[in-house]
Length: 141
Ligand code: HEC
Image (cartoon, rainbow, N blue to C red):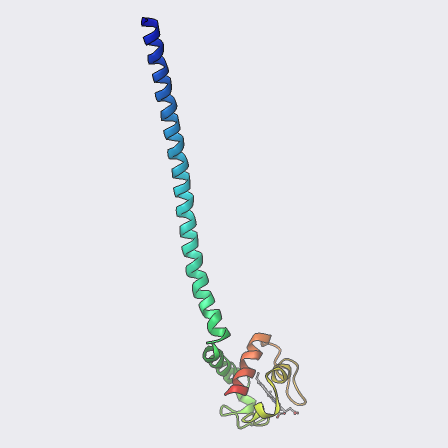
């Protein structure tokens, strides 16, 4: 009987040990999960914040961005084209671009910017995107 009790106690101890191990195990898992979850959250937040801002900008460039593109286009025009075509587009060394949208599509103008035309040197230091912005601004102005 005594032995039995002792044995029983032993089992209880074992059980407690196992329980503790389990608890520690569960705790560790929870900690890891929490850590990962936290990490993920932070990442997500970071990413979402970043992407949010970025996609916000992209969206602005994309659709609502008519304004931003236009502004960029105008600035790019002023620094790259105005010296020949005039700050007010009325021309100078180059022809007036006031009504260039009637004659050329955005694509045509991008092509002219990238490859030049007649007396106009190629403005190939401008990226396709920048050329696009200028062309869109010129046509939609
Ligand atoms: C070095 C002076 C110079 C610069 C800089 C310049 N152009 Fe020109 N551009 C010309 C000349 C000259 C022509 C006329 C070419 C021809 O038909 O012989 C011309 C023609 C054009 C035409 C065709 C106009 C037409 O009616 O045929 C477009 C469009 C144009 N330029 C856009 C631009 C844009 C946009 C920029 C800035 C990215 C730019 N140009 C920068 C000199 C320049």
